[in-house]
Length: 314
Ligand code: NCD
Image 1 (cartoon, protein in one colour):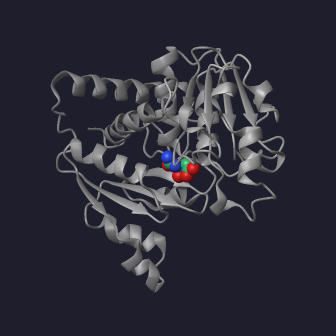
Image 2: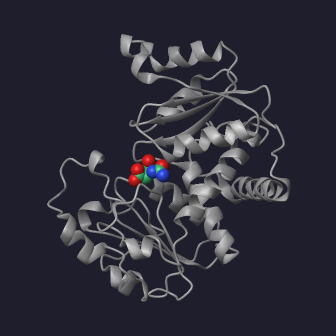
Image 3: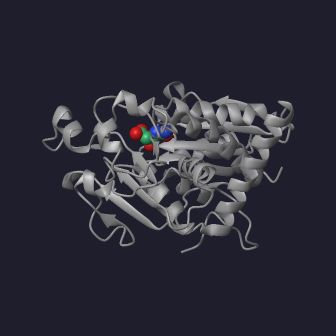
């Protein structure tokens, strides 16, 4: 299979998935994000590295934080950002996505941020792009690479390195593109153990992640955990709620303050959002001292800046 993301000279051309990206490319992106963050803390004026560049947001699925985060990242570095209005676009008149891309590319666009419910849509567009970069902002349950990167950066901020850490991912892993990108990124950076926890119906197919430990008992999964990543029930991607009642769910898989004490004392709690308080996470934990949820959001801007700058070689 040709690698759409990396060109023959080893340069990152698109960002579609963390699967197979490798430690080197991931570390360069994280280091670049830290550089940009440090520069911002230094004098509060960003270098206008994307001045004159045009970036188009193509979101075929709802999004609050990811779209806003990409938009702020691009604008703060001086780019022009267009939010393509899907609802009133020609895709509704039967135009293929490839034709939409070609049309927008002919207007001198440099990058497309793509979110779509079908797995593989960003890769499909990358295969058709003439010169623009494609950034996957989440496709189906396949990948969400910038979320994976911001999660890695947040973990690195707290734990210094990823090697040897025990990371618990709890919730609806089967339908989660965030979990997949986290697992690929953590594995590339040498994580100790990833424990996947949730009801059987929400766990991935056996064999998808042979490197992970499956642990259906959340209390057991939490023992000695350094990092706990909580996920919401992705109701929009389920056929049915598979017999899961939200109140019962919290009793078995909700992260309560009492349960959190089973993890290491310095464990951090993460959630990609949107959070369902009282379903997968107690409000006291979401807002508590071990929560890194808002740090994740803040880091999101810097990893997206780093990705744009790297892909547009600015
Ligand atoms: C996630 C997504 O859209 O995959 N949200 C996000 O981008 N931060 C997770 C989710 O929807 O539960």
